[in-house]
Length: 524
Image (cartoon, rainbow, N blue to C red; front, side):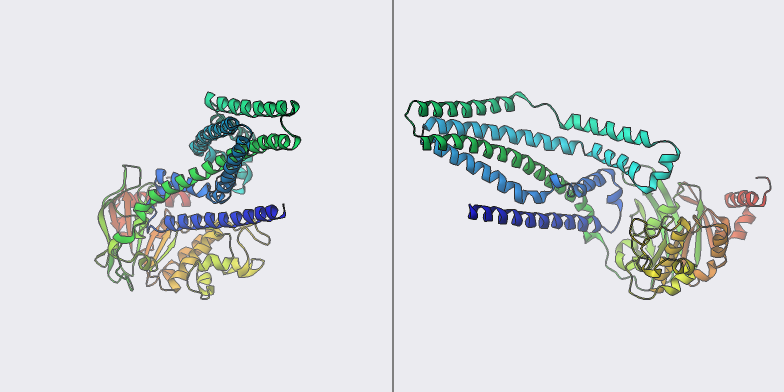
């Protein structure tokens, strides 16, 4: 008994340790595969994104983790061994009784395996419902949506939708069993109960001693325990195997985009020296046929600033994504000093870029980490001061070491404008580390009027010597750029300086006067 107890304890500990290692390895492999492609097309393709999400999230669910195979296979084997041993023991009483128990146990195990695979399929077939349930749960329990949910009186709606989705999911998962599993279970019950009755009758008739009687009766009970263990372990095994199958689907879905062979390897050190050019560029997002850019021709001289304006959906942000190498054009080419971007080492090219997106990434880490963001370990003080964010850092309770998330002890939450200033500081820190192309996507979207005016006043100083691409709806910003282009339906329809475009009295002049009239109080 001591050896049995020690062996079981060691087996459970080893299986748990091995399972954790397996799960960690699979998670790391999936993360590497998702991060390997140089672009983000695979993440925005609905079918691939769904597979990646399933492959990622199922690794977190304890009941479906592949690492459980280290334990469940052992339990499955143990249950089968117990059943086989019980059949051999009962064969010493009556050979046909041992054979009957084995046949009933194997049949029941087979039906259990079929039912387990069906249940595993239902669980993964309901993955969309599971994502919807998680979405409603997040709406009702996390801070980002808390204000709107309460102001619009939606708590009860969210709770009810979560409950309705759960009920619909469970109705599909917990489907009624067919006849075959019930017949197999009934046959097993007849064999076990009939065998026990037979053993007891033989004992009462004096043809079987007390010791063998107890042994045979206990053998039936132990066999039932082994069958039950096999059934439960079989279900867990099928769920873990189903997770592995979905994991493999996710890996194969992103494999075509992960191959680095098509990427260039030419260094981009010192680029651009002459120009960045887009030649007859057309582009569509994955899963859509609408071209957000159509036969676009644009030249951005090195060391100068270019402002891009246009209505929502005109293709402004898509243009930036192509310049960053996050997507490849459907047609045409993006060239840097005459070299196609596809020929360049993208990692090296991106070190030449400093980008401020409209919604900068908010890391729940220290302010220092949010500004450095993986770049070389140098002081970010100058970049923060140039971005006008020095007072923000100084006001933090622990200065640079303050965690920028209220979900952590001692952490704080910043406003949208403060995050945008830190995003600008992050970009200027990249410039400090050697970046030569500055991209500003709506840099004043979350700034108050005073901060916005200060940013405009310092615009020429911040962009001096850099190739700058500015996207904005605020004409008080774009008028300071060396050149301005107006996009409409993915094409350049006007280009020139602020004064030149006003003289042409075209779309730019019309939009500028509309915005100016709104601020001056005149008729629009």
